[in-house]
Amino acid sequence: AFGKDELRPVSGIGANNWGGIGQTLVDALDTLWLMDFKEEFDRAALWVEQSLSFSKDLNVNLFETSIRHLGGLLSAFALSRRSGLLDVAKDLGDRLIKAFPPPRTARSRKDTSKGIFGAEFKKLLHHVGLPTEALDSVLGNDKNSSEVVISLPSSDINLGSGETKNL
Image (cartoon, rainbow, N blue to C red; front, side, top):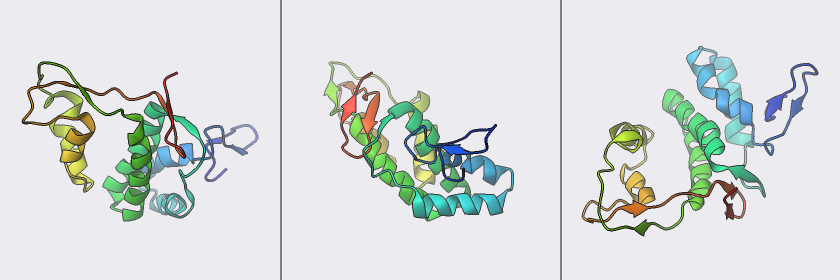
């Protein structure tokens, strides 16, 4: 079942019900590290670095893929500092960013420096080696503008083509 999306507990056989993108393994990387299972972590991280590919015709849910895969890869990188994990995360991020439409603007600007897109998130971006301006770029927040940016993503995206859907 190694590298499969799920493990069927009764049969012990792996299944790729998420498109064959190592769902459980990627989601568990940070847990392996935190539990001090370094040998298991290294084996799993090596599989991710050498075998995991998002270059496929596969429709995924943006939310689930962001929290499980992108979040799993970034947290595993932040803990282990394995640059190969960051490379895979950047590849996935480049694919997922296409779910965000070009920003549209409204009349008045609200303060976007608080909440989940505030200091904590910018600190995480800095910690993993990404410029904090990347967040402003995604959200379309120009500090010199008095307009509010409206940029809601699509719910689903095809990792290969970049086509988006709202289900």
